[in-house]
Amino acid sequence: MRYDFDEKGGGSRIRAAALAGFLAMAFNVEAAPPASPGVDAVKAELEALKREVEALRAQVNGQGSQAASKKEVAALQKEVSEVREATLRPPYEWDKGTSFHFGGYAAVGYSSQRTGGRSFDQAVFVPGFHFNYRDIAFAEAKLETAVAPNGETETKVESANLNLFLGDYAVLTAGKFLSPLGQFQQNYHAPWINKLASRPVGFGEEASGAPLASVGAQIRGGFPLGQSLKANYAVFVANAPALRLNGGGDEIELITNEPGTSAPRNKKIWGGRFSIFPLPSLELGLSAAAGKTALEDGGAVGAARSYRAAGGDFAWQYGKDFDLRGEYLRQRIGDGTEDPGGPFALVSSSGASWKARYIQAAYKFMPKWEGVFRWSRFDAPHGDQWQRQKALGLNYWYASNVVGKITYEFNNGKSGELTDKDRLLLQLTYGF
Image 1 (tube, one colour):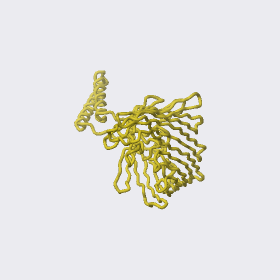
Image 2: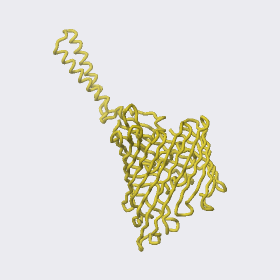
Image 3: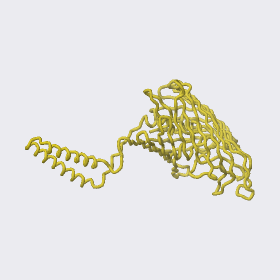
Image 4: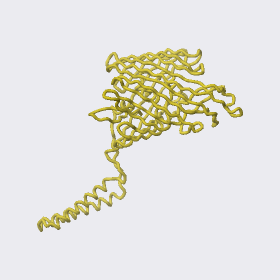
């Protein structure tokens, strides 16, 4: 979830921009209060009090409007009102300040790989649950369910966090949240938002070019810069991602992209992102992170190594039809000497880096048709990971949240690897 600065009516407020696509179609469902204990007994008492009020009213009408009788009637009417309120209110406060929104996305796809497999390879459903209490708290959870290649169902938590609104310019988020480093992972990864049927190389769920999510806490928001500029920011601390070995067990292959509730050697990373809007339609951002991490394998933990991440991004919207964006992000680990008698004694002490970048242009040339071009590149320490890619796409928008895509990838990687095979992708996706 992403919170940005917005200005309206002379005032400033925080808005949930990562939900912008969902809230355009949202419906708030106010939960009906559950029945209070002893409702039948309270209703019986209420009916008895009503009868007493009617009797007193008749007595007053018959004997004149005496002050004592009026006071007695008023007192009973007040008691009836209090009993009625107690009958309707549950033992906890659930009022119009609490709202609920259900949103998410679904995607299905087909892949035809040159000199490779051809299959319907994607069936994903990601429901999102969002609860908001006035301008105080917001809770979010997204569950990703997908069909695995072997036919089993894979389920994981994409995000689960609690947010407190600290004021007009800050929101505190704690739990699992999409990484604030860069833009793609936190804003554009959903299939119905992503312009192509695949992610840029290095920005996938399995790649180490860009972190996918974090488990920790962050403060983010936006604020004005002078009269015409505005800025967004995010500052976070999170569990460090673990390092994984290659098949030979002698080199570090990747930085894990899925965070956990434990950290190698209890290490943490901290960092953030800052962006400005020199124009209302142009955003320029910088990201950085630092900390310590370590190897983990089979319950064993290696020596601590330094961790660094840095990157930049931009997004430009020209009118309603043209969109241009790009991003660069590098993750790097430092040298480390493993215990000679430990499980990682054969692992190289050298550091390594993973770099991912892309630039993408999209143009809607008819009301429902859109053309897309993307160039992306992923550099990794191992030859079977690095990849260069050019992708062309043609999209048909059935609605603002329903799109069919045809994407063709020209891939260049290590000979014989999947990263070197061109692909044709078909995808239908719906955001709700």
